[in-house]
Amino acid sequence: MHRLIRDFRLAVLLIPGIALSACSGSGSAPAPPAAGSPAGPASDRPNVVLLTVDTLRADRLGAYGSTSTSTPHLDAMAAGSVRFKRAYAPLPKTNPSLSTLMTGRYPSAHGVRRNGAHLPETEQTLAETLRAAGYDTHAFICNHVIVARHGLAQGFVTYDQDLPDAIPTREAHERIAEHLVDAVLRWADTSKPASPFFLWTHFIDPHGPYTPPGFTSPLAGGGATLPVSQTNDGVGSIPAYQALKGVVSVDEYIARYEGEVSYVDREIGRLVSGLRARGLLENTLIVMTADHGESLGDHDLYFQHGSSLYEAQLHVPLMILGPGITPRVVETAVGIVDVMPTLLDRLGLPQPAGIQGSSLDAWLEGDEPGGAADRTLFAEIGRRRAAIRGTLKLIWDGEKKGVDLFDVSADPGEVHDLAASRREDGRRLLEAVMRFSRENTSDAAPDDDEETKKTLKALGYLE
Image (cartoon, rainbow, N blue to C red; front, side, top):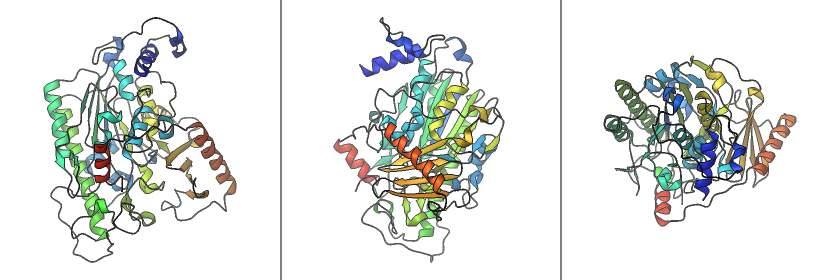
């Protein structure tokens, strides 16, 4: 019943001149256009290619300042895009964050606040909205926590979740980047996607354990070492799920992480060039971002995510390029909660009810959105919340009732707490956090099945 109601609302939303409130009348709901059918001007709309990378810190791309990681393909993409210098994940876990990307709503609004939870069918996704507007919708994923039963397949005609690759040291499977790209290019050759199409490809490779293909350690030994923990918290130790036999060097784990980033960069370059060679990028918007970052020793947290609201786990790349977009760098803080409303605005499609992100399209047009600097972004995990406004970030611990305030521009390592010296700024951000918490209370039940529990444990998400 929920899906019928949602499909009816979606169909009416996309009929020009009819407001969403008109859904209260009786009568049968018009069916959404079939995927790929050119419904009037829909056939003139650009294709959309969404590239997301698991566990990718922004500062490990050359375009974001890295000098230790080779990322020529993503750097070239950034040079031709509107690159958002300060983009934030809403929660540093894959399923919650990607559910936000696909709905334009925060985790505590759509209910997916942990890996293993289901995105409710009542949530309207980007794929559903685009499919109803005449788009051919296809997804290729690589991570068990976003397989179809967890809800992100809503609206996709193709949802390719083949996971053929065993994860070293873990009892779980994934799909490494080269096999993922192979699958997408086979699809492009055999399916001949209708225009316009929406293609989402999610890469997992920077997620631990860090085992980039062909990796040879550049290190001669020495340097700081860490004990291997029996847990996955990574506090002053190597998390159990990350541990590689005989590897205890901090620098080697970091080098391996950076090797994974370079590997996924190479494969993204191969994917983009392959799509271009097949004529599929001639009228195409490309969005590239990540679900969350990774702690690499920041705040004594090593080689893990999902545990803090510091920059290491929240700061992600975001770049958008395509027809009519003039490259530039945007300094204002934005979030991946903004991706869905931005794309719909760019495509001339109406926004579904309940959207919490903001359209970034004015920046794509070369303008500066009014009031953007005064906007507050949010992030969350468990009972902790963060509020980001301008360059200030407040982190509120709902269990300890503690508050920290940082200027992430002047203090990117978040080591100087300004809560005592900038009380008024802290008070305003704390009020915003409390209001956000009151207004967003959904918490979907986790998936209890034993297969999911076993896999989440193997991936390091459960003890």
